[in-house]
Length: 103
Image 1 (cartoon, rainbow, N blue to C red):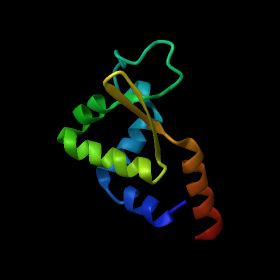
Image 2: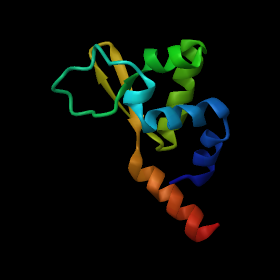
Image 3: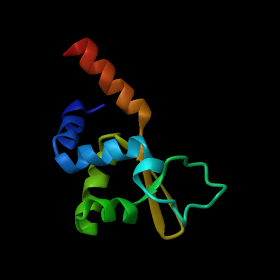
Image 4: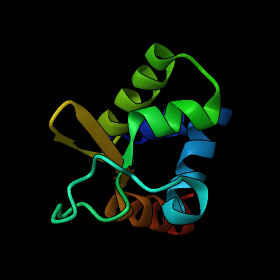
């Protein structure tokens, strides 16, 4: 894992806030109407919902989400024309252990 890329992604207030919101997606976002009921992507939130909550432009949010995905902080899945994101808990546990044991 590229720890510098991870820490760069975490160094922005909005990107950090998105991770916090995605920790409890049901409490922080409304129902995801276009996520198929049989979809195996629990906790996935549509880009549009994230964009709406931040109040930033869609292009800015897309670039933030792309950066976070490249850093391994998020996973994504596309259903039709909608892309959904959720936290990558495996990477977040790795970061926590890295900080605890290496820093």
